[in-house]
Length: 123
Image 1 (cartoon, rainbow, N blue to C red):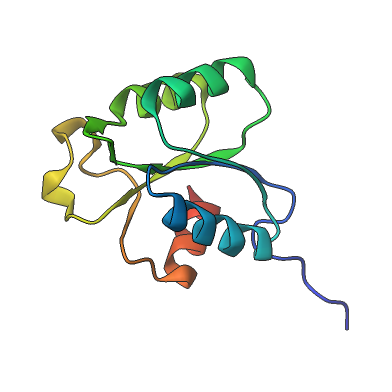
Image 2 (cartoon, rainbow, N blue to C red):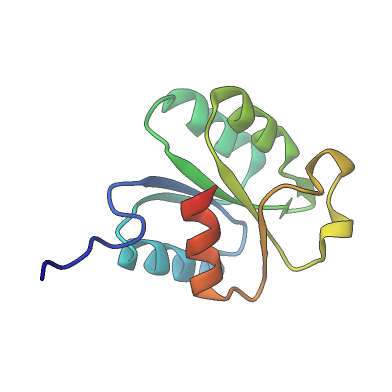
């Protein structure tokens, strides 16, 4: 019997998270699941600049909803235009999301790693 590949094998995932320690822990989880991780990037403008510079190199993203007091919705809109799947990460419920994103894939902090990986793999 052959070994199966990790859940995110070969996927290039961007982490947009303003808490450095959360971002680092998330990076470790994603790397163990086989992903190549970009980030974490903690600022709205830096994330947008990175995505625009790396078009075609990002296969998915985890977006913290609140980045230093700014919402990550402009990043979400850019990723949608580019056809890049993403998952919102938030410490709040679905009702705290803007109505246009209320039904979008999300995981709540603190993360359940299995749920996060499954949600990201299916995004």
